[in-house]
Length: 369
Image (tube, rainbow, N blue to C red; front, side, top):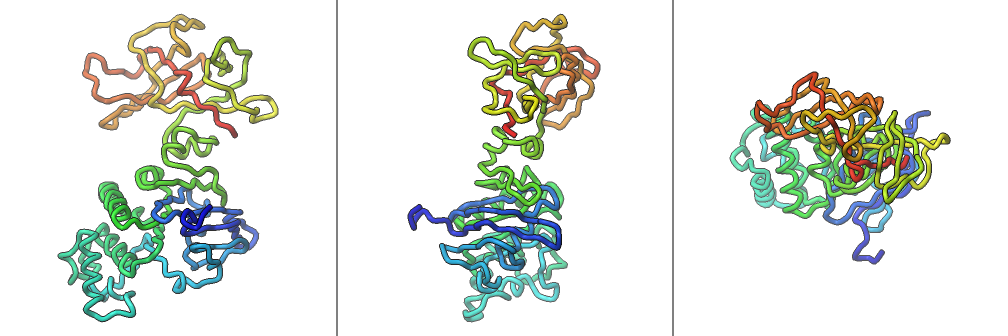
């Protein structure tokens, strides 16, 4: 890697334990000069501890933190000068919005401090609120002020610790768009911690999905959704259907596997068996499950590849789409399917309706481990 391609920030072999509990284990991570990275995972997976190690609030037991190639592992947060926004906003209640933003601006005149604060307020769309106090602001406005305060000193890296999780859904959705706009406008690298997979999918260039202190998979949001490597990743990123499959002798171009009583065609088999018995996990996303209206197929007979009798057990309406719970006896399984919710009364599915489902071979994805 040349000097021009070198990452802005790099973690090498970072590990951290609290007593006998290992919280972060052997983490390697690189942050590009204008990259938006999300550390995604459930509570207790180690993502917040890792962020605290990056900003210097927490020290690691092993490994190094490099900034532009320089070892800053033992630097204090003040020496690193990274911007950070917490979930709790952490605004000073006795200071106005303007004073909250100028508080950390040192080494410049008051006139320059005010000019910088006003520029940041304009960036977050709150120019008219400079004289208000935090208690006079909504949660979304307070979070924007916290972001403006973090950006005011022109940090080389912005760290966000669950910054939107305390907000209601509509405000959270709006601020996601604002956050991405600001990041693109400033071309600033961001490392954000979140447990919300939709948030990570919408914001990140790169998602690091953490599990039990390790990065289980990293990649673009599209890669993690379309090509999950493990059952945990497949279930954490979006909704999915997972079957246990066994390889069978193949005929023709496609591979064949046994799922329940069915002999199913898929694009390719795993390169190595996942278990000693030769079984492995197979997944398909709900939107790829095709439902054929009012089609009856005799047991054990398919008129299309991977077509099976099913019964609709439940329907959940979500506006733009409906989710169907389908019992598929031949697969010894229950499937979730999604389809557009724009059907009229004449073609609408009903609970208890018999139907037929098709699982296209190219949509069936093998989980490698």
